[in-house]
Length: 149
Image (cartoon, rainbow, N blue to C red; front, top):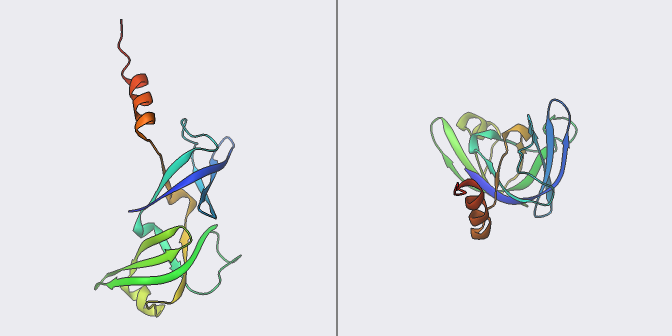
């Protein structure tokens, strides 16, 4: 599971969906949810998680030719090829991200260590969790477990 810490920059909602813009280092990413989490506020620090199998890889420029808005350019650092699946590690501006792709795709794309690739992250595949420090945990615990008199 890929994980990174981000800050919430914007939340836009209509009657059907919420679009949440987050920033990881200098990179903005968009997330699509059926509704924004009730706890989420602009300025919040959040943890983002993305499963390896949810990250597509492309080579060359795909700007404007693909509907996925979240593009992370990077350099392929390491790979492990299996018979069916290959795991690929890419150094991106958001940190090292891992992707699982078919070995057939890996070979067709002629991927190798050091080559330039672009990771494509679907907005619906990025999960959000609150970042809780010990102070936040204590505040939440007090609210959740209030002693009834």
